[in-house]
Structure formats: C-alpha cells, structure tokens
Length: 262
Image 1 (tube, rainbow, N blue to C red):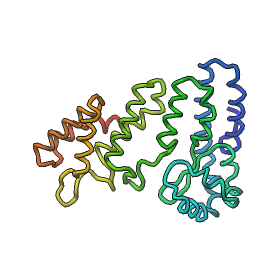
Image 2: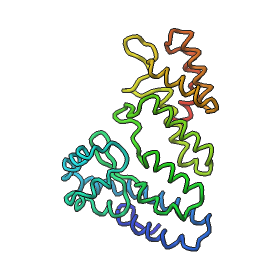
Image 3: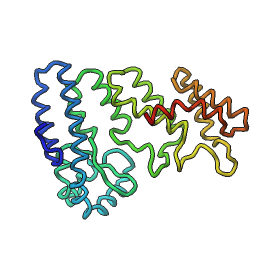
Image 4: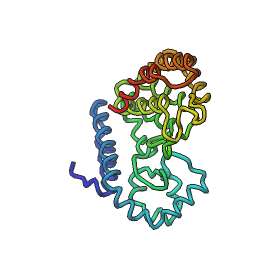
C-alpha cells in the first residue's frame, strides 16, 4: 500500500517483498500475498501506462519492426524487445520489473508477464500453481483471441479453447475469479460472433458453414459442456429455418450474452 503505482519500479519492490515474505508462510498466506501482488502488479501496469507511452513513442516503429521480423503474433513481447539495446534503454524499467508488453491495433500497452509471475509457482498452493501452468500453455496474460473486432482463431480453435477453459474452471473453482470471465467471453464470441467475424454470411443471411461445423463438433466432442445443450437448441432451430437466425435461436443463447455482460 505504500508503493507508488505510477512508477514501474514499484513492481520490483513488490516482487522482492513477496519473495521474502513467502518464506516460512502458510499456504493460505502465500496464496493471499501472491493474489495481492498480482493485483498490485496489474494496477501498476495501468497506472504507469502513460509514462510508458511517452518513452515508447520514439521507439515505436523500431519495436514494431522487431516484432514483425521475429514473426511475433500474441502474448507478451517483452522477451523479444529485451534483446534490442535501443528499445531496452527506452523501456528498461518495465522490462526489468516483470511487465508484459503487448500490442494491439497498432499500439503498445502493459500488463503482467506470465514468465515473470510464474517464478512464484513452486511456492503456491496447488490451485494457483495449476492456474499459472495452464495459463502459460494458453499463451499467457493478454493472449489475443480477437484483434480489430475479428477472431484470430478459427471457429474450431475457438470452440476447443472455450472447452479447455471451461474444464479448467470446473476442476479449479477456487481460482474462478481469474478464469470465469474468460470462459464467459469465449462463449460469447463462439455463440454471437464479432463485428468482423460474423456468424452469418452477408450474401445469403445464413449462418456460415464453418460456424455450423464448429458448433456441431463442439456438441459431439463435449456433450457435458454447460454450453452444449444451448448450441444443440440453436442448431435445431437453425435446421428448421434454413440455417437463418430466428427468435428461437436468440432465446436459446440469450443467457450467454447476459452472463458475459454482467
């Protein structure tokens, strides 16, 4: 509470303090301290974002070129950018203090970096340790599922990702505050689409065949998913109306939209 969230060095102090505090602490205390550290680290990223933007602006084009040459696509770009002396000099305090550097729609922003955070995994209770391991496999913090209101995954990949997150949430409900919002977001994208990844074909007005195939695949592969019955109802309504959206489809998926907005 005594650290200035507008200074990136504060996360270094918080990280060092956590590293010392977890020694000899109970599992419950370690979990509470880690959660507080992660919350502060996330706040620190937001509060120091303006200062980051000022020093990042002069090297923006250089950083962008570095990522293009490295074929970087998603997740934190910190590891890639750290290797360039010019960029490192400009944003060194954020790189040194465990921040992730992310890019979206031509701009850079900050957030936690999974590789920096998971150094505490071995000292955490099983649920938090499992969450960090799972998150690493899923691309870390701020993995880009959508960009410019369009999916970065295929519909099949989106359905598979949704089920993985849903399954993890069911297995580890104690970390639901970290996972449930993402499950709800993925479900919304899967059943409602995005502005630039719509469910319907503009010419025919019918639901895209790739979407239908992904929904059918999801129901067949994951019949126990809490979303499977809803998708089955949607498919049945579509089949009865030439694969066009109808009030029955809207009614079936309504709860998914309401859940994510809430």
